[in-house]
Length: 69
Image (cartoon, rainbow, N blue to C red; front, side):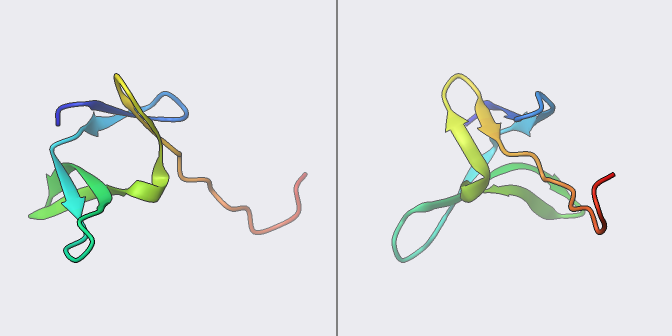
């Protein structure tokens, strides 16, 4: 809790406010970093690169719809 979250492009995202657990297995499935319009903003566990002094997450990659110039 409270760890700062950064993308792999060094963009500050927020800080860990809560953990999302899967009920049956008790495994971590995501991290909550804020709320917007009454809903929790989460990062899926599969998007996490590393956890240490900070949390590093993969950036969303924009897909191009055409040929590469």
